Length: 411
Image 1 (tube, helix red, strand yellow):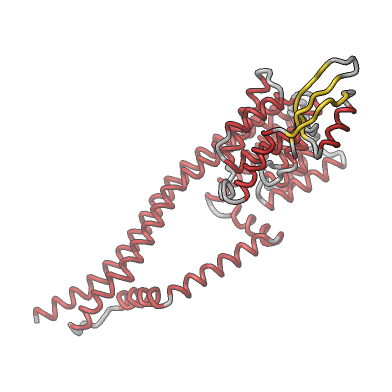
Image 2 (cartoon, helix red, strand yellow):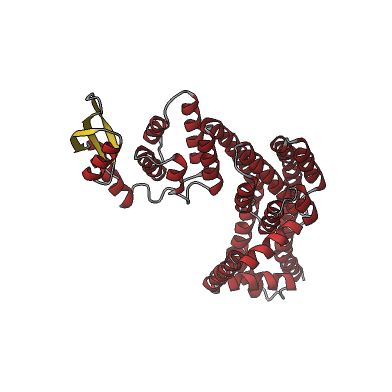
């Protein structure tokens, strides 16, 4: 939306000037008249021309390949909360932040939000124009803060909440990073041996007229198949992966997959704890921010990230709408731990639901840390043992024919 600089006079004849976004000069004149201003002069700002050039750059290459990370939104939220706490106006804070953002794609989004706020939109309405960047949870909390006159409080809660969620993601990723590297390195080494090293030994064994044992034949056959039909193998892997993803995207497929994940030993327990912590922390943040319980539960269905738990939240929402307590449907579902349900029940009885939900989240965050450490201590020996078995099988496949060749030479 273009930005115009204007000069006008108010209802007592005092000269006023400033900038404002509008669709056209005529639209700006209408806006000024609604403010009881008499327009004197209007001109398009150089800033607007610069923004158009920047927009063209973004469309034709600058920033289009940049991904907006959760870290970008966390920093944006923390800066906005700090500036509003310091007494800076919302529009002023947005202008300052938009100039400091390095990610061109996100910078473009914040600039559009700033323009919308400048033209009279609320912050929540401006954010809702970018659903791919800002979640339904984020927008609902901002709207509740605006309605309650506590936007700075809500922004601070959001900053704390997003930091906690990001720390949890980083802990999980950090725990799985080393095992993943170990697995990939092991697979690459095995492929190298099977496809390049083993065939050279087979040539030697064949010339020496040595009968190949079964393990050697299996390994050699695998290597030959990989070298000759690698494109078919890659295509098969791609098709299978695509088919699984397509199935998981469906409602029933997503439900079955999430149901299976929750039942996997150790991993399922960890995921359930993460979901309970996320559910509790998010619901506490929404309730404390003034969002109604029904609206909060509507948001929670998408926040939990698991279709099984999402359906439980959906049924809970229907029960609460009928006048039932929150803890009853959660307990009947069997998907939430008894201690979490009991603490939620106490929170409802004492009128401190937000406080107790935060306590549940704190407890399960700590439990997740312990479970991650336990999982890491189990995964590393498992992969090392698996790699040992694979290397042992390869060595046996190569050494047995060598021993047979040595016996033949000796005789």
